[in-house]
Image (cartoon, rainbow, N blue to C red; front, side):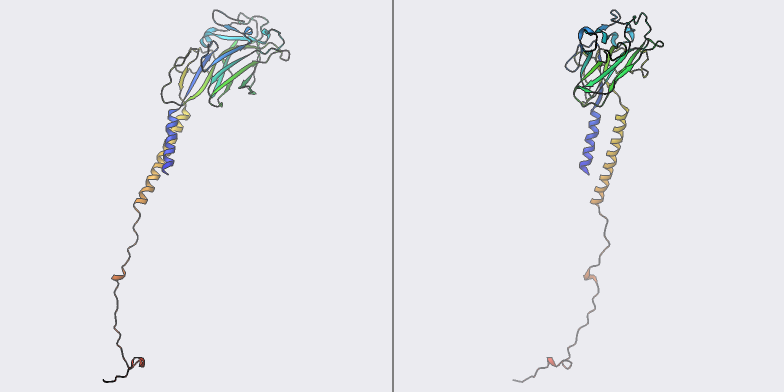
Length: 301
């Protein structure tokens, strides 16, 4: 019972010492020892900002850090889809959430020039394994021109360690309409099993995690560094810690009660000593007449 108590106590403090952290990787992030972004083919991608719009012109103030990278399947050298257009993100963590700006209104305007593809059709791979979570969106003729801060892929069941995510534009003759991608940023989740506050790494700055709009079409602006870590309070962890501590205390009380009972056993009923019992003694009188065996002839000397 005692070893069980110490084992549960160890698990309790282990949970306390681990914390969930997030890393925001912007499209313009130059890369470090843990994260990087690769765009291929490089000639198919343009970086957009308030001063350099790229192919189309979304609101730069609503983009993460004011920048994005855009590409279409029509920008590949052969224009027939045989040269894949894709991007890869290398990261270390247990989850990743890819956020993009989605064209939602194909009506030609100052933001989306005529004959510009607006279809969203993307496939995703984790460590070269297809995820079967394609994202498809067809732009209409009404509504907001762009949907900002839209999650196009998300997973949080990865093993701890380095991973590579590949986002592939599904273009070519088999896709009706040109495919457009405006990558904004990605959120990487990892489990930091240290009790000390993590310091900012290269190319990162510590700051609170922003609250992301629940509605993909929300136009709330997010002001963040290109990549940063921050603590993420999780109610489930707190509830688990409280429940674990309660269980430890109950087991400790049970163990102490058992130990006390063994140290002080209940008294048994009193026993009577044999020496204290009264003994009825009746002497036996020998009568030679009753038993002839004991008769002997007496011969005087």
